[in-house]
Length: 95
Image 1 (cartoon, rainbow, N blue to C red):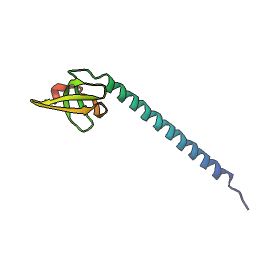
Image 2 (image 1 turned 90 degrees about the vertical axis):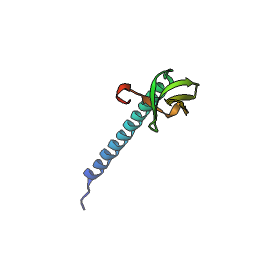
Image 3 (image 1 turned 45 degrees about the vertical axis):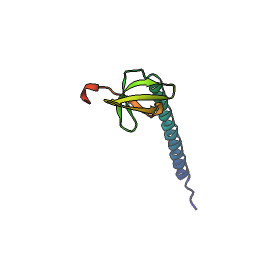
Image 4 (image 1 turned 120 degrees about the vertical axis):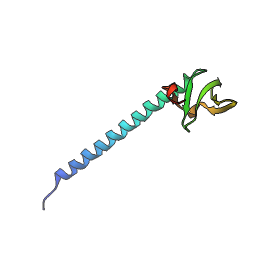
């Protein structure tokens, strides 16, 4: 009978690698979430933003949890602050 001690050590290596990857992914997600919350809290009136649904507009009013976006002439849409995907980087290229 032969024993395969090398096989069990390979399983431990794979186990440690999987645990490490899981921790790394959790940390990345946490960083992105913090960055997104910071962006959402720093939005000011007059800034051009886009939503996670793809709407692009200018912030015309805000409350602690909601924004009103001006999308076009006579079109203003209230949205939740959490629906903001980011700020428009180059506004001239969109119009």
